[in-house]
Length: 367
Ligand code: PPE
Image (cartoon, rainbow, N blue to C red; front, side, top):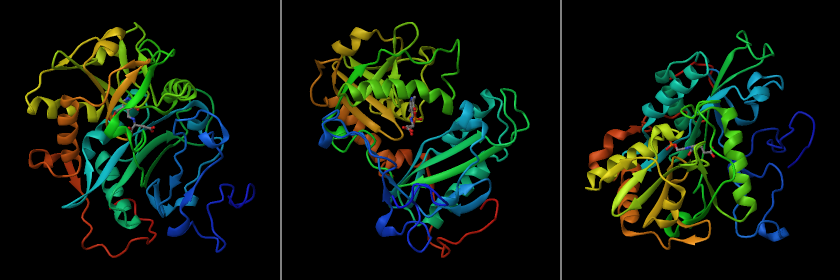
């Protein structure tokens, strides 16, 4: 990092005062524990962020390092924001956003559940996102739309504080590590229960709610596991800190139902369909903790993680990914990457052929 203070507190600008160039886009926000310094060996903790050129912020395409907020932004203090995690894949048909409209529908639903009036329609956000991918010259990336209550009023009923909307895109590799998809991960049941619908809204993908996931993830990482599995308030299996969960029991696929405080994952829904299309029976029902240890196979699904097998839970060995997991994973990967004809309508293609304005900055609201 170049400066700790001043006009470039994050050290994002190079000597010319511009955003980091292609050659030095990687940065680490602060030093984190790793196996080198003897803390938490074996678990990958750092996700150095790869920057893009532009971020869409309140209707404008702004340079990455200028997409900032006021420290008195409401969402920063109270967690009043909702977001999405979406992926765009480099396919034969061009960059393709997986289930774009379904993710934006969930964003809209999350906002509604927390009484946040979105100043943009899902269609406007979708158009801006595609333009953002074009202008950043990306073919595959993670997409992070975020809507939050901004600066203007403090207190809990701050109706006059404006809702800000941003979309950022950046290249983001395997969420649970490169080896995770091939050989599976080690997971542990968290001592933290998933947020209860009695106090919060598990169906919403809301910023503040992620303190729950962060507690669980931190606990499991500090104990040397790659992921945490949370139980719901009743003690039934719910999901991972950022993924839904599936088990194979006597050849059938089992996954916790909506009433078990899950997030209604887009990957979960997609994998259920892929599994059924492959001829498997998929059952949504409550899952007892011990079933995690007794299952033939277990895997997690999420946008960032994709489909990740679990090879060990609470030191109970499940072993290398099983056949059902591998078959579903292969088909699902084909769907994500545009290689499965039957799932092509899940892809929102970003037309890049005619665009020659990558990197240009505009104040246009949306594409
Ligand atoms: N549960 C939780 C709590 C969750 O955060 C995610 C996604 C899922 C289930 C799976 O949902 P879906 O992506 O629609 O299949 N987690 C996102 C955020 C991860 C992050 O660290 O940030 C994601 O995968 O993008």
